[in-house]
Image (cartoon, rainbow, N blue to C red; front, side, top):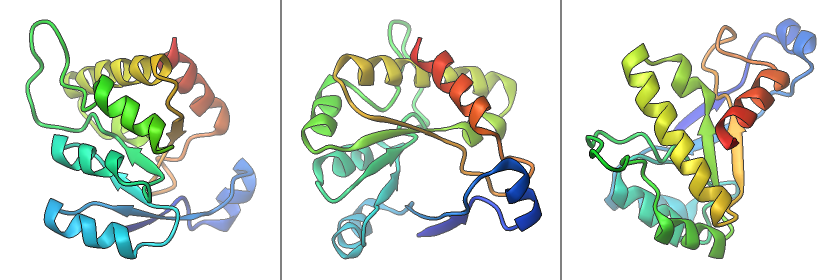
Length: 163
């Protein structure tokens, strides 16, 4: 498990008018994941990526957000992207009322070639979420104050992704 705070610098927080919230993100292997989900208190956020982790997270009703399902190491095909979501997983997310999270910090911390791949996968996931009416969450899980972005920038990021 990984605990992240948005910011620790109170002066910086007051300038941007943001709240500091402690977010628990579960990032672990599959065998431990089921036990952790059962014991965890709400809200439960699962760091996605692997197909099995994405599926396990979307099948469980205790999970609130599946964060960054596009973070997998599979190579994209010629005709489609391996974005971590498909129509079956989107229907599961809608049925179990699980939101899909898009992390702006993932784009900031990657190199240009990898950034385009992640952005394309985000586009595809947003299109699937929109089609199957799955809730979407746009966030920046900043690890330091230099990665923080304002609400206006996140709104612009949301508008670009949802097109």
